Length: 113
Length: 120
Image (cartoon, rainbow over all chains, first blue to last red; front, top):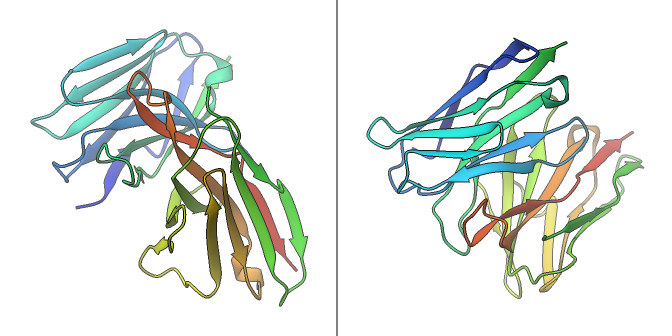
């Protein structure tokens, strides 16, 4: 119940294309869903986050779509660029002071020029 | 924004020795910090949650005596890998609950830059 399932494991997209990464969760107590970007040898950095009171959130080229009834959420990267090539992790937590973040398995994105 | 500083970034140690990794919140007080371990091309695996002034809470399967965590102040948590062996070689990352870093929400999680531990 604590798992967050993420797909695909890897993704190749042409420059200018749309990258889509999907995640699913089981624990209905989760109410905070961030996405992180990680470059090799670095720690994860927050891209965008959403809570269940909205179905979509957009920040620049990044959009989270959230389906509460299906317990699924996804990251869309519009106009993908080679600089977006990185590993992306979805995550989930219960939004509280000491609650831990549960990570998805990660998606390695390669944007080809 | 909130910054978490992690040191060292890389460390090589001999088998049987101990290594300490520091995680500092530079511009905020972190009552809760988290330690993760990451294997190559894998996800982050939570090892433990440390709370300032109290004992750390370890995840199932993580050896408390092997991975000592101390959170003695509101800005510093340390992870000590005791009697390190080659199988402890990994990328260790700390994180802190941080204000204003929730992506538009009040709180989020800020990560350090990680420590690459190699035990030879």
